Length: 496
Image (spheres, rainbow, N blue to C red):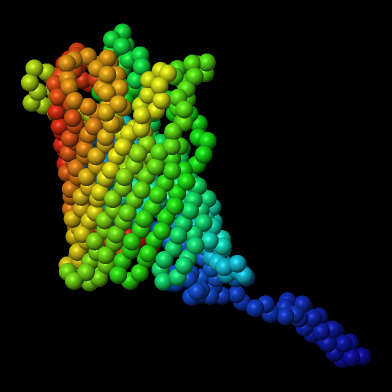
């Protein structure tokens, strides 16, 4: 009897253990999902697990330092404390930047649906004056592409693929358009085959297409001697009358482009229409009326040649732009549009000064808008010495013309503001030339060094009255004279 009881207890225990072990086992093993390579759109794309959408993550880490710059790295010392050359300006400006971009694509019956996002985290120490270091978050691109349409923040359809950098690392080579950090738009692009495409877009003008920091439209009425000090300060900063006479936007800029992109290189023609709207003759009182709206325009032609006989990978990039009442297409994008540089060697004055204000037009009380014209040309030759070393030679020339009527109005306003017996007109030219050398010891790691020379050729002769330019400059007489400056930069960038 004891033997039987023991056998039964042992069997029961064995069954319980077996049942417990069976309960721990899965009834059906789940399939393991692996990240699969997506070869449809080039290297670096992977399928998002469980979807038919491909994704690519990328970006870069950059560290750079500029010498004799203003505002931000690689910007020539052509305004602010750096333009004045005083002890408040920082001779060296450091910047560190992290860029992260996300590219997704999905094949559909309507074609590829694409989204693209590019954001940067930046820390700059220095700037144009002795301010504390600061960090900022920026969004370069955020757009959706579907069935030929682009919705969101992307490079302007007017711009060339190299934007403002045909062979340089600076973002302040003038003479053409530069929207390398994106502009809000609704665009449609048609592909005609054999590398030929056409685009048309409606683009936000409130970001890049209007003057930044000063007015795009200037009312020169009322700048009399009673307000010489304030207006003198504003005019001698290159910022024209200072008061913002620009109205709110009504119609986006209308942009069109035809591009041929083939193995030999690229050819592009672009055009843009830009509406100029002033607020009121007195910007704080609507009963004073306003000038009629006036349309401006800009046109661009660009050429890029590849596979040059000088060496594998060499290229020549050129673009030329003309604008009437749309000056930010020539001096625009990420660059400033007001210039004020001081120097020594004055005769009968405290110092010399060169000013330039790139505005769309001027007007007087009761009058219409007189548009300003500008043209520019820029380019670069890029040569690869070997797989590790490369050198670029680049340059640009920009010319601004106020016209006879607009120039006379502007000059009279300036003379009322700062006094003096100077002669000439507000037209000015800016010439730039520079070189960059890059070393890439390993793939996607590049060390670059650049130097650029900038000269402002202004058209006033003579001296101002006794004025106060502001900042550290004393109240004194200043002589108009051309100015120039050198800027250098070193950059280290790792792309992934």
